[in-house]
Length: 204
Image 1 (cartoon, rainbow, N blue to C red):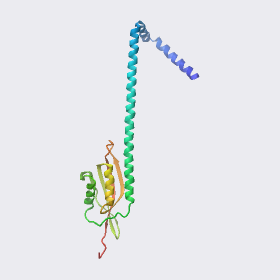
Image 2: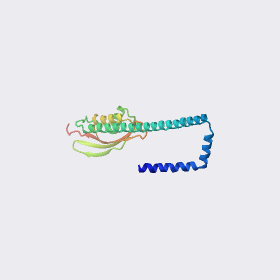
Image 3: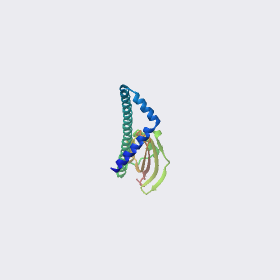
Image 4: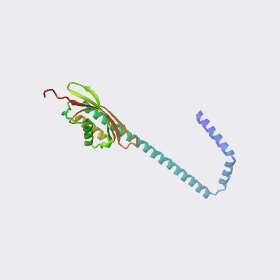
């Protein structure tokens, strides 16, 4: 109650100050000179203008909320796709016994061939230089990094699956995905690979 009383007093003081202003007195005098018809027309005009601005701000607020909500939904969908892709590739990495035959030939040519099968153009693929990895009695490891640009999430999954289940022994050690800022659905991916060549047994 005390707060209401203070608020009423403040409103009353503001009203008194406005009433004492010369411009308000002139405006009030002009208003009193108008007949009932003109006063009614002015009141209607004020109501129409106020309604227009209220409608304008309401529509602007609704459109702003819709755009913000749409952006959030698109980002959430993209994050869900990336998480699903990561989970699927992780499952592929855990699969054992997918070793194929001991084919020969350059690893870069093999990777280009596997990429082409999943619809990745050669211009979107960059293959790093080969580095020697572990060298055991039965196999030789070659380390490779490949970068793939402007592809979709389906192609990333297909490429990872094709490399790990292909005719040559390839294991994915690391997979990194970077999305385009324009949320177009395209992304860039970097893969670290271990490529194994099985040594032929002596006398075989």
